[in-house]
Length: 335
Image (cartoon, rainbow, N blue to C red; front, side, top):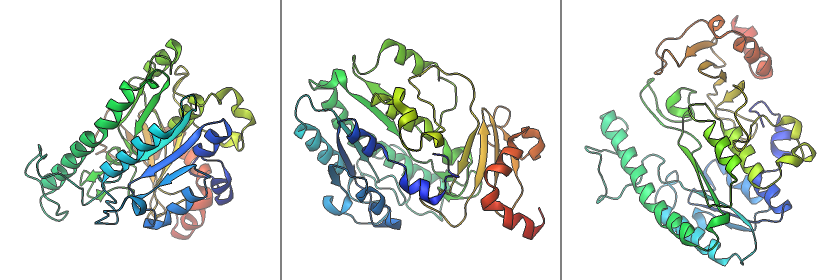
């Protein structure tokens, strides 16, 4: 659902595990993240997941944001997959956490140097620390992918890889994530690997039609719903009228207008940012400032803030979409 969904809708709409169970899948969530951080674990505990494992179960959590060692989560996921009886479909989410600051690394796997865990020191060394952490994640994930690809079930298996956010290393003055809607925080890696029977030729061609196009988290959600075999029944599912994503298994059919925010009714950070994006045009703003337009085709680093009018109708769309959040503050400070 869009980030403007109200609290009741955001907490009532079914999550993917619930849709999967309704479609006959066994479900799992294995996370190396600390479920007590910002209390996000409450959301997953209420999702009716068949097999739930978090950092508190895995152990070895030395720092609350880094979580438990990712390799323990990978091993727990491999054990779950092996336990699923032949013929039983499953939907499993593996949630890795060690690429959160201060970024866990293996001292014997540091291709990017110099590296440092100090966020107040050399930003390039701090960035290298992150890159080394990502390299460790690649090595950690590889055994699971190898096992999946050599299993008897691979022909009917699809793996969707995605991140929930990027990371800023002072490209626009800040660090970490969830503080802006600039590219370094919202542009994330993603790929789909699938066995020979998991996707049809038409579906593979549809995915290819999105090459060079922007896709969004809402699209990832809708793609997984389609993988469940539920897309044709989408209109009958709860809160279907609030869905904004497109299945990437269906051919690209034009640029959507997508609402963006660092804040939702599920989790509301203190310093929220809001925006609208269509193609390469992006409009951003916060509760204490006017909308700014960026043209990423001409200004990929988002260095030139243009007047909102240069983003066409995006400003009026943002005004309508976020009026409930911004209206009172705008009036008070004279927007």
